[in-house]
Length: 308
Image (cartoon, rainbow, N blue to C red):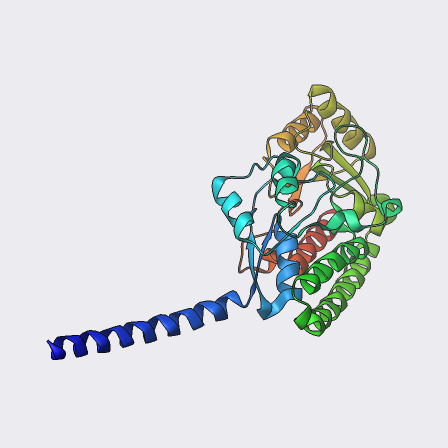
């Protein structure tokens, strides 16, 4: 009997030891902040600023349209498990607002684009938008929004304040270099050729930053309707101004732009697809275009090579 008790005690001690080691490992994992974001552009920024102190979950992957996106049960679970949440705001994630506003009552939730000075934002033309939400295309404004990421991480994890500040400073230097690169590339395009035609009106901030005229078949949101009159109006503009390239977007069907190309063809004006741009979503994870800087460089290069 004593031998059995002894064996039982040994087994119990081994089990307790194993559990203790497992708990230590879990605590080490839990030492990182769990961050949930909506769009990939924000997720990438959190990874840059948060570094090894964060684990990031992005709800919207490549090819996902945030204007139309509805939260799944899996998304709700990620939001509930998060220590902190970052989303764009300015009605970009329009169909998720109820969920995001509700969860804001229970944990830190930041609408980072809404921290930008409203006088710097582009006004929307009607609809449910007061402002154009595509602020990541103006790097200066995007840095203002990312200050909210840095602030949020520090407020949640003040012990690592200097770490987040140093990472943010280094990342912002990279963004400054990106802005200089984009400005140089766009400056090489003759002014009369600086016309960017896309499926929806997502590039307003890009156009303003680099003195490019932007035309979108649909409005600020892909949720907005377009009709034959909109297609015809854009076709007439392409023909009149001899614009020879239009662009598709990774998160939007090519159907609308193809209608424009076909309409121009019927009027004897040949229009080509200048390339695919990343507007509301980034590229596949693990690729250059799967990062904000890589995505931006891809867009700049694609636009520059097609319209200059």
